[in-house]
Image 1 (tube, each protein chain N blue to C red):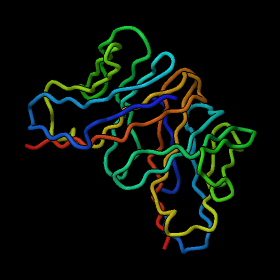
Image 2 (image 1 turned 180 degrees about the vertical axis):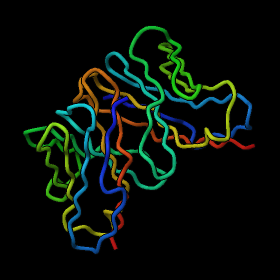
Image 3 (image 1 turned 90 degrees about the vertical axis):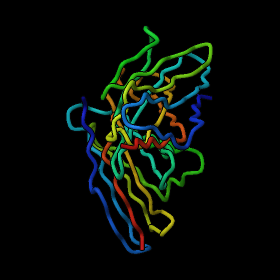
Image 4 (image 1 turned 135 degrees about the vertical axis):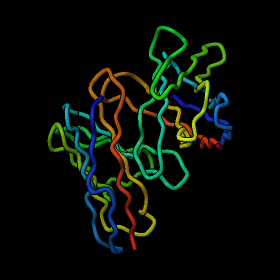
Length: 115
Length: 114
């Protein structure tokens, strides 16, 4: 079965500092990994995905994620945090790429950026 | 990117009544849509897979008679919470996506059952 784990419920970072939100995965086949962000009372917004290719994936709003097969990790990163980055972040794994493929979400990490 | 809408964005109802939530794909056809529920400060839990022209597939522990799903067209899926009770109060989110691409999520519907 596919699963993702986000070990941190909350991450606190000062504005301007680099941030990392951790995610590890467990899959039986090829990993299709995603990061989504959720602002209060809103749906999820897609940030980035890893399907194949370069291990460093660049996404929206200056975020990037590094796929590490040996460590089965897909950590989300940003070089310089903004207060507006404060939100709930979800790592997710998909069991395929068809429109019927399910997405399994991690428990979420709340990112708080202090001015 | 693709757009998925939901209606209503929020609804308050009395216990025992039924509530219908719509999920639409606005610029693509979706043979499959997904319904999730999210409790405060928790992750999204997949409830069911909505299949156009056939029965929905429910996840373990989700009551299919409680949460009726109808996917009558390639751009619309509806979730009806029947005989709603306070414990059904939650944030309901749908998703859909073109084949081979990421899933896009609706803005969510907040349901409060009094």
